[in-house]
Length: 296
Image 1 (spheres, rainbow, N blue to C red):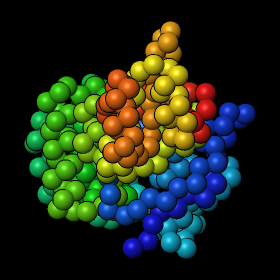
Image 2: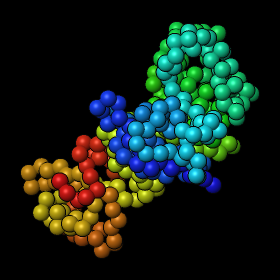
Image 3: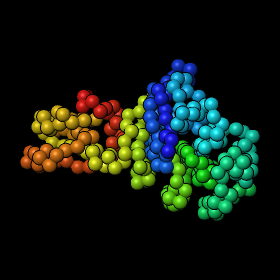
Image 4: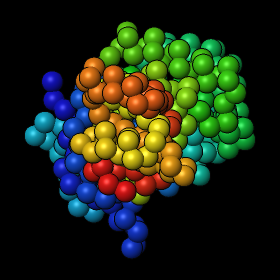
């Protein structure tokens, strides 16, 4: 199977670097979480992957074929968003927008689209511009799922949705993914509800890629270690410490590394606490200045 590959991709708007030299391989038929704060560059990266904008530097390709030279590759990508920028389309009814989408995406499934409309109780006679924000998000979700695009991108697909609608989306996505495998990227700055969906996680900040790891690896390696500062510093001198927080003589360390049984025994003997850290806390600590160099 061919992977999607980004090689040295940079995007500059005026003098602002939105995406900064990202190189990355995206495997087929997996669910990725694209995490970052507001303004981190998530939407810009998704637009680059959808061929809606072009890189200032670098290339995006699948196999040996570059995305910006291929109409066929572009048709394989669906970027599902709550926002529709073209006024002429926003002024259309939901039915008209879905009809347009059915002609744009070659793998579109009309029957599944109808099923999703009923599942989300969406009034397709309404004009898109008059829908609530949550209903606009539902339109984007339905387009993303019904497109059956081999490369489907969801840009914060929970905006304005109540808990029931969000759960309906998560369940629909997982069921359809099992029946119709494809590559899915979900961008988010909230992850407590989404963590269990992701197979691999990408974290970006200020346009740069901070983390690209399997979710299983994150669960195994991401830890918070707390205790006497001097003792812990010595024990972690060869480990990947991504964030430090000092409280007098005590300190908390967010670490991304493996530990032997002997090392864990040392923690217990020295009264040093060692516990898993969830994805959201790891994300927060990386985004507020963390690193993988073991340096402050």
